[in-house]
Length: 172
Image (cartoon, rainbow, N blue to C red; front, side, top):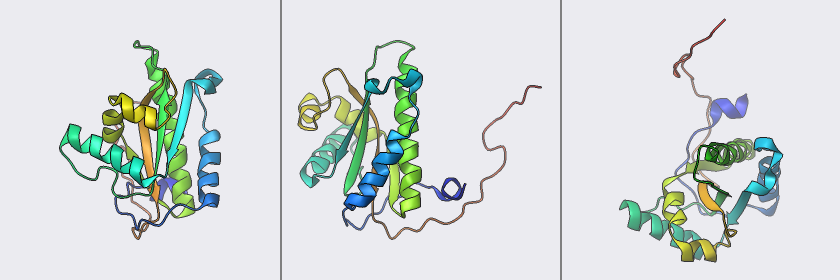
């Protein structure tokens, strides 16, 4: 609950790389995520720490959305890709990616690392075949979500979460 009540989108990073130990803890959190029907082979994760590749993804996003620095200068981007079928069953693919991303995000909070869900830059990446190839996105997979992670001076503090901020119907 502590991580849940402190989690927020962090958009400022010091540029200090994530340590090997921190990366391993993040990956462990990702591997602990549930995946629909246990079909873990339908999800692929790409951990990008190469500054040149991160810059290329940022450039693709800027070109598509007209905004600079959509990855906020973070030293790590974790991309989740899934096999999409083009029908209603794609819901599970997007859900799987979101579940893994949230596990990663909560682990980042526990590790004292800043983190922010990334969607727009991933949409730009999904349409760039050369960049997907450079990132070794597996054939037949589509990038659908991501998380930037890194050291930040932005602190996590307890948030006051308003009750009923999501419309809720309880059926007895």
